Image 1 (cartoon, rainbow, N blue to C red):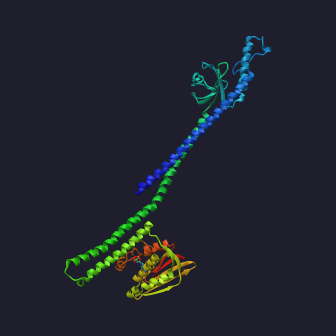
Image 2: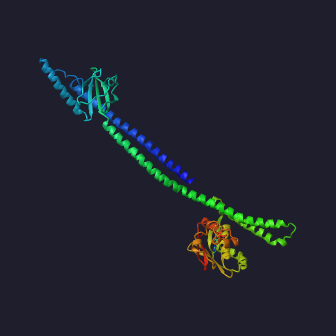
Image 3: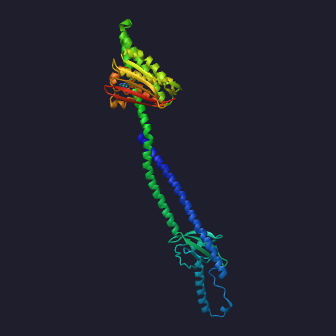
Length: 437
Ligand code: ADP
C-alpha cells in the first residue's frame, strides 16, 4: 500500500514539475519568438522608410531611372542605356549601404516580376505574385522560399510597382531551435531529477506515517493479546464456579479470588490503554497548576508504605521543596508507577530510596532500588508499550507492561526527560528531570 502511495506521490511531483516546465517553456518560447519577430518587423519598417527617403531625394521613385539633367540631353541612346545601368548600380549600392547586412530589398512589378534584386537573394519557391497581391500599408508577410523563411515588408510605390524589404529568418530559426533544445533537455533533466527527488521525498514523507501505523497496529494486536489472557483465566475460573452452583463461596474461594484478580488486572489494563489512546490522540489534556513535587513525593511514599511492608522492602524518602508547573494527578501517577515498579522488582529485604529536589532551576526525581536490575538490551526497550524484560516473572507481578510507557509520556508532556541506569544484580535508578516552576 505504501509502495503504491509512494509511486503515486512521485508521479504527481513529476507531473506537476513537468507541467510547470512545459508551461513556462512554452510561454517563454512564444514570447521570445514574438519579440524576435517584432524586432525584425521594426527593422524592416525602418529600412523601408530609409529606402523611400533615399529614393525620393535621389530619383523620385525607387528603382526608377534618375531624372535626366539638362547637360545629359542630346546624348545618344546607347550612352543613355549605359548611363542608366551605371546609375542604377550606383543607386543600388547607395541604398544597400543604408541597410543592415542581413536586410535586402526587391522591387517587384504588379504582376510579380522582379525588377530589382540587388542583394541577389535566391527567390526560388517564393510566390511573388501573392506577395504583391494587394498589400496594405507596410504590410509584413512571412513567406517561405526553398532555402529559408523570410519576413517582408511590402509597400506599393507611386508608379504601381512594389518595394519589398525583407530579412531571412534563418538566424531567428536557429536561435529558436537552440531555445527548443534547451527547454527539451531541461525538461528531460528536470523530469529525471524530479522523479528521483520525488521518490526520495515521498519515502521521507511516508516513512513516519508508516511507522506510526505499524506502531498502532502492533499496539492493537498487543492490547488484544493482553486482554485475552485475563479474560480466558477469569472465564475458566467462572466455569468452575458454575459447575457447582450449590457450593458456597467459601469452598470456592480460590476460583472467586482468581476471577476478582483478573478483573482487577483488566480494570488497570483498560485504564492504561485509555490513557495512552487519549495521549496519542492529543486528548489527554493536562491541568497545569503549581505543584510541589517534593511534597507529592512524600505523600506517595507514605501511601505506598503499606505495600512496601507487605513486600518486605524498606522504602525511604528524601524530598525537599521542588516546585513545578504540572498536572498533579498525572505527576502522582508517574510517582506511583516508578515506586510501584521498584517495590515490585526489589528483592524481599531490599531497599527502595526516593529522592526529590532541585538542581539549578530544574527539578530532579530519582527512584533507586537494589533489586535484580535490567540488562543493557532491555534498558533500551522498557519504555516501549507492553515490553516486559522478563515477561513471565513480571506478568506474575501483575504488571501490564504499560507503566513506563505512560510514565515517559507524562514526563515528556511536562517538557522533561526520563532515563534509566541499571546494573544486573545490583539495582536500578529511574531519573526524571522536569523544568522548575
Ligand atoms: P510492568 O507493568 O510490567 O511493570 P512497566 O512498563 O512499568 O511494565 O515496566 C516495563 C518492564 O521494565 C517491566 O516489565 C520490568 O521488566 C522492567 N522494570 C521496570 N522497573 C524495573 C525495576 N525497578 N527493576 C527491574 N526491572 C524493572
